Image (cartoon, rainbow, N blue to C red):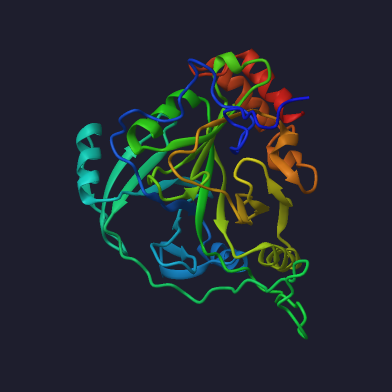
Length: 376
């Protein structure tokens, strides 16, 4: 029997194991800047009216609209958390991160050879426009207008064991859209995972909360990273950007914080009654611990309601775990193939064949490892 007084390096942390000698440290030694948070995400859609109807049903508030753009916000103060521009097709454009200071914008511009420009739209401020190794446009902004807070969706009062504050009153959560509070995180897929990972760590100062590796291929490095912002001793979301190696390069999903489990469940009932399709949920994740619920918008882009996520300061070490479909949740319904993106299709087959012909980080062994992970 093991001695309970003896603790391993990671026994009291979020992950069962940490890095082995010589593995990726999960952070840059001297990043150019350290961004404070995600500011917003940008999309294009051909039908802004349909986009607005779903946005309201999902729980966004409208911060502004023009003939060619829709600005969505949550209840927390700050900038809009999503901008939808009129375009020919429904697609994700890229993220915008918030710099801590104007001097950080200048430093980033000098280091990357970019320019600091006026943002030139509602909210003002300045921006540095970059392109990451996956060819995603990445904006870093500062000095944008801060919108005031909106009324919150109040959490329900719960009776727990002998602590029973709710007396002579019933629980009746309203069947209405859950109110989005803020943008939480973005997940993307890329064929150049290692290069993109180092780019975000080196230039934006993100640090890795958790790495996932493919079974039998840990020696080849991680295949997924959950990255958070580095705000020192201030605890922040377990991940602001998550990225995984895959045969396609593109948007996977984005996540928006809501009040609590009841808000997620009642808001989900509201969405289902209006004919929207749940992708997966309700459950609780492993990496990040969030209670989650995933939905598809009318153009099949995936968005997530979440609540009760982990918060880490800068001194929490990077965890390492095997990538497995069954390891995505602590509890909840079985993960769906639709959510995993592994439903067989001609488009998926074309992506696999194309990536094998290109110069990237995927080879037959990595692809087989990914397929095994998604079926384990």
